[in-house]
Length: 226
Image (tube, rainbow, N blue to C red):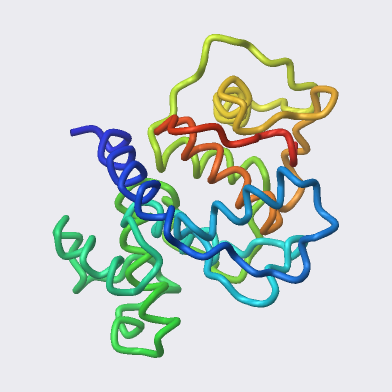
């Protein structure tokens, strides 16, 4: 079964499981576009992000956080147990180091280290991050995010070609064009800003739109963040 088929099935199950989840109660997103707020709430309900008092929407997304959100989407839940069960089910060799800077010692480390270890096994397996080093504290740029989403969920281009004025190299064009043609990103005036870092609000929007593309259940607005 293709990865996208598996992820779509998980997304479908999460959608129906999310209807009884209490809406996220963040105190720092009220000034955002209402559709962006909706996407943040949905990202929490689905399990990509965890609830709390603050979401920190403008905070730059670290590569470790991107790893966690992608792995949660693949595994079908936000707990360490969800990640561990996925690793066991798919025989992802939990006795090996996923990245040089995410060592096997993390498997028996703190809760956050364990979570990152199992999430790293998942994203390494699906090809979201392919370098020997994860660089967990580094920020994720928009062009890197495009590649991560396309590779993680086997996304394929839609029918429409979108002109992107600031995307030059062939690889970035390939991945950003897929996102734009699926309206996962909606560049303002044709500018994608590939070198800019992704913030938490943007990642929530991108993931929810990706989720909607894979499993179009209901209507999820996608006009908040470009």
